[in-house]
Length: 65
Image 1 (tube, rainbow, N blue to C red):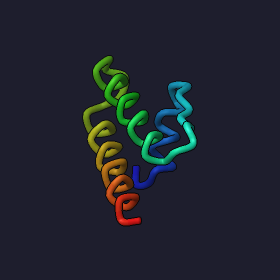
Image 2: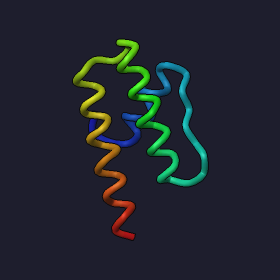
Image 3: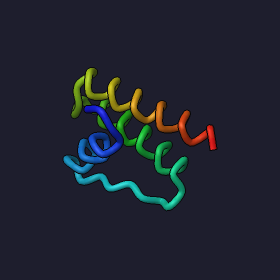
Image 4: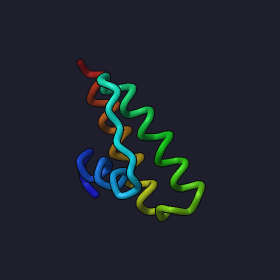
């Protein structure tokens, strides 16, 4: 997993499609969904950690603008 596309595809595997229309809100909702998947042991610790790192990087990139 290396990009936001990979994170979206991970969520899509579970029927989760996130599009609010505002990038920052999308990222927050993705974090919540990932946490729920992890807490319910549907994704591995490695998948969860990697996805969160990608989302945090994306948030940081958004703040630059």
